[in-house]
Image (tube, rainbow, N blue to C red; front, side):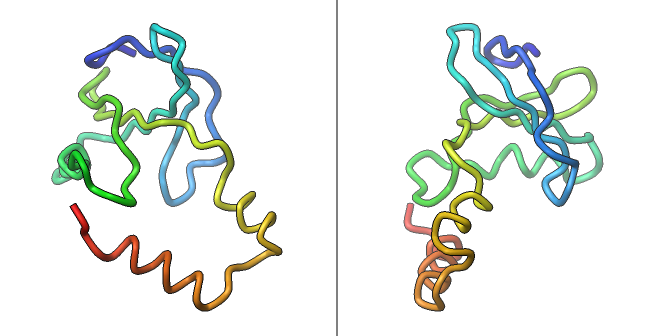
Length: 110
């Protein structure tokens, strides 16, 4: 996949789910990442404008653009999934941990 950089796509993670298709990817220099392609439907390009440099608690976007009639966002690959994090934490977060996570997501600290 050619965006601003060259990316080699790998296997798809799980099913399409709420976040659509997500694929393993590797940059031309070997950096691991994930790619989220999505249709160029009206308003979909707003996802390309969401990342803001310096924004806390927001996954950084390594690359983005158009490829074969779709938009695509490239992000760093996480070491583990949210499901794995919850399993490691005993199956669920406490109320206090949940509130902390929700505040981190809801409050813009950039």
